[in-house]
Length: 332
Ligand code: NCD
Image (cartoon, rainbow, N blue to C red; front, side, top):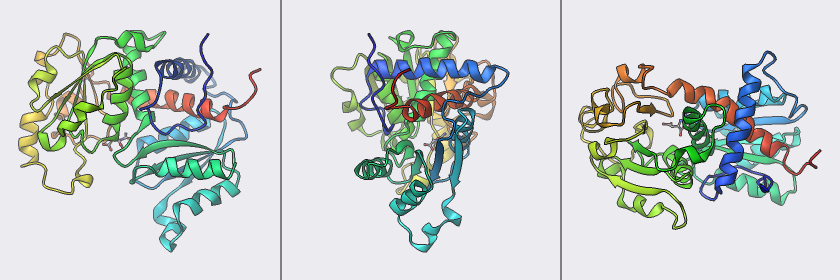
């Protein structure tokens, strides 16, 4: 028998068991059916309040969480730091407590510093507030909902009716680009290794420190290989994920020029020729067109899963809000 969901908060994927990943995939799959139906909505979180606390800019993640919460019939509040009391010196914890006093049930938190969602979750637990926290991206640490929507997108490719980890075992997946600064790469790494993927990371040495090679848990079924050139990572790859060059996080001069970076690591349809037939590409967005990927490849429906990722995001975030929003309730 499968164990029951046991996480009040979703903060990272590093500690997840394969069955938890599969449970999210199954739950997201049933919400995808809801979204494809006529009413597109379920009453699962009716009366609950979901608050988006985004301390960093975001288009797709914030909107996706908002729509997911609305599709579950929750009420949604959005916090925007530029026009908030943070500018008057209020702390993040004070902000969270203010929303708690208004009845927030779930806090979806994005922050530029790693560990903030965990800190707020610990404080909420200490207050016995019953509030759930979902990490929507913290610094360079993790972005679990993105890792899970990527997982849902690619497992749906191999079995649209029944997306599950087992379909990824032994597949070669390359993650290319600014891995050093990427919380998306880290969350994907945990999920893909747990799925038994043959995972290859490729970037210039300044954006892919050797230490990443030591991240593979000893008991994980996947394989992890690092490359400092692109070609060996792409050779016979089934899927390629490229990442945005995070210029806002580059504190040092880590690259010669964007043009040289594109020449060495930018994805183009020509470069994909070494990959397996039917290769697909992913990108979490936002994209620097012509830097990490050519504009033409990004828009090519034969290869690009970028729009599917955005679509998957709503069903996956519904699943996550549902699982933590109903956590602790008696099963009917
Ligand atoms: C990513 C993020 O914010 O970490 N974007 C996203 O959530 N879709 C990746 C990025 O900013 O490059």
